Image 1: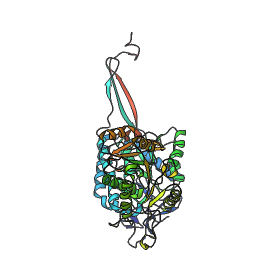
Image 2: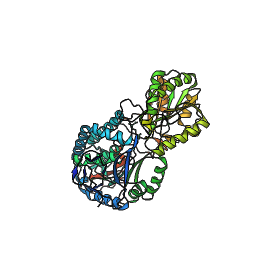
Image 3: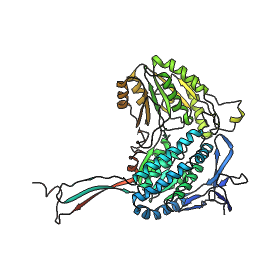
Image 4: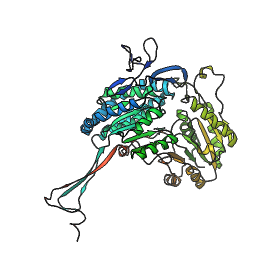
Length: 519
Ligand code: UN1
């Protein structure tokens, strides 16, 4: 028997933190059918603190297809009862979960900073986003609106209702380890689906804590099941399962494409939220102080590890030097460090692979553009030696169609592209395979409205950076950012429901549509 696998308990001890009283990290199980269970593989993996990799947070199951099969069975068994539970009642469980999440916000945020690295105020924001979507979707329990309309025939009733789809496969990234699972699970659950949840292997602790709360809030056994492990073993088994008809995935474009192929073969409903190459356009009349603040926050907040992060600034050449001066001094002043330290502005990258990738792009940048600030790992700071730290880095005179201008880096790197006017700015902004978020800084109302029309992204900001979407509006992007679905807002329900059209003929006779009411 592996050392036990119930979170909060090791052997018979009850411990609520990630380590037992002797400081030994816990081993968490999968959560299947309302119980914490060891994987049949007998293997586990560790989650580390990216600010100091000597800090082992806990161990998690390296699960395999048999664990996924058990979780899918549990979710399938729980489905009929959950589906039959009136939606307002389902919503009440979501309300309880939202309230619990709010009550435990600080503890969760601290656990998140330790495991994912983002600075504590941002980790609090991540949990807050989970709370917000939980309350929004709880309210959907009393809405879930369909249409009631008239029939073309007399004495006949016509309406449409939303129906759940079944077991939803929820595959989530590490960068918003509470918010994104909530964005996906809350609409799935309120609509009456049950869930098999596979979190990113960089943040399984956040996932386990979240599932503990879902359980405590009263979601019935089997409604939410957690299986940890790799994409190859766990993700693939969820995707291939004939009993998981709907999948929601956030992650890389490359993985998204593979997932789409597998899901297409089985005609699954699939919502993809993939990369971004988000740009901020700065016109010559912009308030440069405000603009620089918005750029710094969007490019280097969360260490640039948001899908919505700004990675390109497309600036009118007349104000490029003045803007760059501000950006250089603001970026140079940001303090690197562990996210739990209140002095820190920029936390670590998630893992060694992410750090390598940023360093590779710095090399590419040295060939393609001019380095303005950053570009080297910090040395001489022993306290940063054991973490994946990289400083905010800016390149100027980036070619819009070069690699720096086109490829998603997902780190603290910003490219400056100089343009002679609005038309050229729009062209540069839209010349990317992605379309998540964009922004314009201008004091010209006409230009602002043109941008709202011309920018080919799912989210457009005016006089604000590219990050900070709110949960009651649709979230998602055009082109290679996804496959046309939206998360959050009431649009999220479209991923997790089927429309059913219902006709009731109360005429007492046969009425033939399109025939009996025509000459
Ligand atoms: C993401 O990076 O995938 O708009 C989500 C934002 C956040 C969500 C980001 N509310 O930046």
